[in-house]
Length: 373
Ligand code: T4K
Image (cartoon, rainbow, N blue to C red; front, side, top):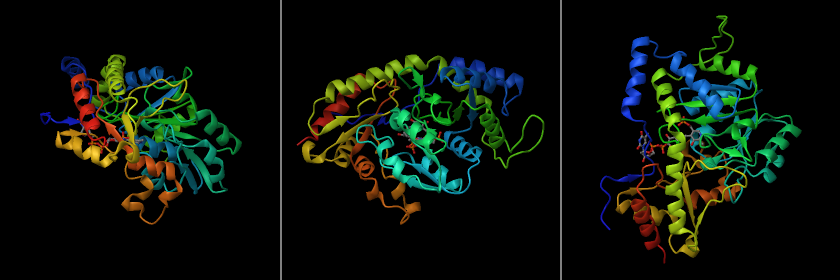
């Protein structure tokens, strides 16, 4: 097989027809409203609130700052926030940058999301909140987590960066917990170039979020919070409006790509796909595949390196665990979360995007299978 030219990357952002974006950019140019809650921003906030099934949605310049503002707006006393280490570094950094200590709960072996059976034993008098992650768009066991949190009177803030549009048994993920953060980064299945949102049922909390993302300002001109600047601008919002219009069609195309991977690779000993939580819908945000080196005969890194020789760039999402990152060296013991640790060593996320050709998927699968001993 020939080297791919151009290379195949793990993802490729979906884009609306350029004429559609141009038309909205023209509107922005004639309005001269570029940021600070202009008409594109207002329209997107309304449209996304509807799409995500939430009465209060607030837009942000990116998912990470949304998460930081969401933590700050909870107004917690200093202490600990329980989370998982099998995630993008943003989740842990947000906790630490807001002045809290992360406490790491291990993940469920099937879904790689917070294991509710291990959660309660980590709750102490210093616990202030729980921050689980819907990793790869697979929802956490939210009924169990929310029930434990309610027993201990703790807020749950979901990192739903990957879970745009996902629901469980007909209920949107944004409907659980105190709030959910969505990332709209260019690499996400729905994006606003950079961007993010917090969804919450609590209107007072949503008002606090307005303050935290805009220097603490409120419409009465009182500066009530020590807020920063995390506002989404009009060009981002315009991209978001158009991508929303094309979202279902893009997801259907991603679904076809994911199905082709499963067709080609299902039943291969030592290689497994993540199961979907019963009742959950999928947005095909990522295509994680786990390798059992003993059975498959090659480990994740060998498969990854082989793909690279063909100019195919899968990614080791999420390696290393956030708890073993250099900046946290010596602070946490990653062996205390053995399931997460194994996942970080064995999972490779294969290329997945709406316009990935099925013939390229077949080639990727052929290369993966060629690594099997
Ligand atoms: N919580 C979780 C669980 C998250 O996963 C994330 C972000 C956050 C919080 C924070 O949300 P944001 O503040 O980002 O909204 C990427 C993304 O930058 C990041 O958004 C994402 N998670 C993370 C999982 O992946 P990198 O460092 O892997 O990105 P990069 O630049 O290597 O891009 C990945 C691939 O996509 C490359 O092969 C190139 C390709 N690409 C990338 C961009 C930006 C394109 O083809 N076009 C592009 O415009 O972090």
